[in-house]
Amino acid sequence: PSPLGPTPKLVIDLERLAQLPKEKAGALARYAATIQSQRGDYNGKVLSIRQEDLRSLAVIYDKSPSELTEELIGWGVLDPEARRAVESF
Ligand code: C2E
Ligand code: C2E
Ligand code: C2E
Figure 1 (tube, rainbow, N blue to C red):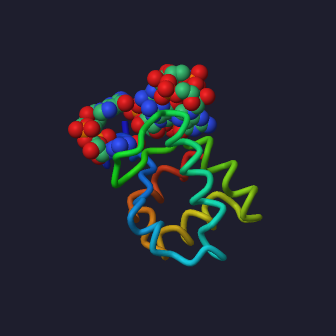
Figure 2 (cartoon, helix red, strand yellow):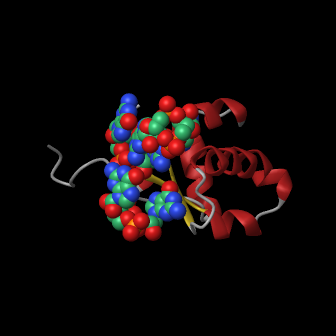
Figure 3 (cartoon, rainbow, N blue to C red):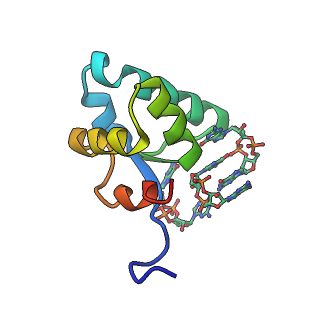
C-alpha cells in the first residue's frame, strides 16, 4: 500500500461549482446534476464521483484526465489531493 494512504476520492465542491460561469463549468454542472438525480442525492455540499466519470468528463472537455484534474483544482472544484486519484489512470 502507498505510504500516503489509500487513493483519495474525487469529491466535487458543488457550492464552488455553482459560482462558476456557465461557459466554463456548464458541462460539469450538468453531469453532476445527472449523478445527483440518479442517486436521489440532492442535499450535499459535495458529491463523490467515480474515477470512470472523470475519464468521461475529460473526453467532454477534450483534455487528458490529468489536464482536466488540474483545471478543476484551479477552479477550486476539486481538492489538490485529487491528483493522486488520477495517477493510477
Ligand atoms: P448502478 O451502477 O447499477 O449501481 C446500483 C447501486 O449500487 C447504486 O445505487 C449504489 O447503491 C451502488 N453502487 C454502485 N457503484 C458504487 C460505488 O462505486 N460506490 C457506492 N457507494 N455505491 C455504489 P444508486 O446510488 O441509487 O445509483 C443508481 C444508478 O445511478 C447507478 O446504478 C448508476 O447507473 C447511476 N449512478 C449513480 N451514481 C453514479 C455515478 O457517480 N456515476 C455514474 N456513471 N452513474 C451513477
Ligand atoms: P467521506 O467519504 O470522507 O465523506 C465525508 C462527508 O462528505 C460525508 O459525511 C458527506 O457529508 C459528504 N459527502 C461526501 N461525498 C458525498 C456525496 O456524494 N454526496 C453527499 N450528499 N455528501 C457527500 P457522511 O455522509 O456522514 O459520511 C461519513 C463517512 O461515511 C464517509 O466519509 C464515508 O467514509 C462513509 N460513507 C458514507 N456514505 C458512504 C458510501 O456511500 N460509500 C462508502 N464506501 N462510504 C460511505
Ligand atoms: P466508495 O463507495 O467508497 O467506493 C470506492 C470504490 O470502490 C469505487 O470507486 C469503486 O471502485 C468500488 N466500489 C464501491 N462500490 C462498488 C459497487 O457497488 N460496484 C463496483 N463495481 N465497484 C464499487 P469509484 O467508482 O471511483 O467511486 C468513487 C466514489 O464515488 C464512491 O466511493 C462513492 O462515494 C461514489 N459513487 C460512485 N458510484 C456511486 C453510485 O452509484 N452511487 C453512490 N451513491 N455513490 C457512488
